[in-house]
Figure 1 (cartoon, helix red, strand yellow):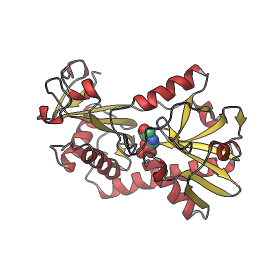
Figure 2: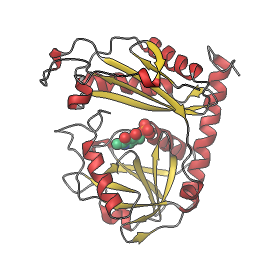
Figure 3: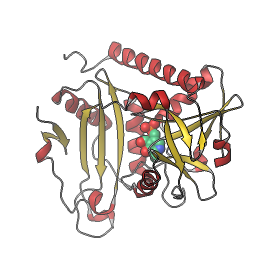
Figure 4: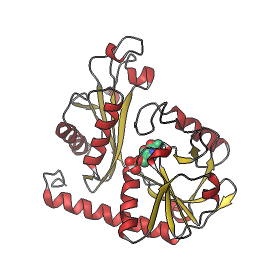
Length: 298
Ligand code: PLP
C-alpha cells in the first residue's frame, strides 16, 4: 500500500511529498516538531503534544497558520488514509519557503508535514535487560543559548552526543549542562531511583519537559513514591540503584549501564512501566468512550 503523507493540507503519496530546497527547515533547521504515539487508533496525549507544538513555535516566533482542531483532523486523516492503529506520528512545522538568508520574515508560509508510520517496537531485550549509556563530552545547549524546552528541528547538539555514544559502543548518551549537572538523554528524559527517592533533573537544568516524564512523575506521586526534581551530578547517577529513560515512543526503558557502572533492571522501573501502560489503556478507553473518533473504522 502506498504511504500517504499530509503536506500543507493535502494527503499525497510519500514519493511525491517533496519540499523546496529553499525551505528554511532544510537550510537552517528553522522549525519545530512533535512525535506522538498512537495506540489502537487513539493519539495518546494529543492535546498536550499540540500545546507543546504551539508553545515551541511561539518561542521561535513562528505562527502556525492552522488551528489546533484542524491539526487534529489532519493527524486523524493521515492515520485513516494509511489504515494505521498502532503507529507513531511525526508532525513538523518549518518556517517554510524563502530566499537564502536567516531572516524569518523572508518566509511567508510555514510548511506543515505529518508523517504517520506503523509503530516498530523496540527489541524486547532492551526492556528485559536494559540499554547502555555514556555520559557525553557534549554539553546540552544552555537555556540561555537555545532553550531545550523548544522542540526544534535544530538537533545537532543531540546528534553529536549520539555519534559519540555509538563510537564508544553504547546505545545512547546522557548530556550534562554547562555547569556539570545532568540534563537528559538525546531523545529522552532520565530518572534514577536512589535511597527510596525517585529523582529526575528539574526543568531549570535545561531539559525538554517530556510528556512521558510528566506522567511518570504523576504516577509515582500517586503510588506514594517520593519524587525529587532537582540538580544532580553524574556521581549521583553512578550511585543510583535503578536508572531509566522515558519518551513517547519508548515509554519507560531501563538502563543497565552508564559508563562503567552497571545497574539491575529494578522493581521500581518495572512497576512504573506497568503503571504507564495502564495509564495509556485508561486514556484510550476514555477517548473512545467520548469520541468523536476514528476508531469506528476497522
Ligand atoms: N528530551 C528530548 C531531547 C526529546 O527529544 C524528547 C522526545 O523526543 C524527550 C526528552 C521526551 O519527550 P516526550 O516524553 O514528550 O516524548
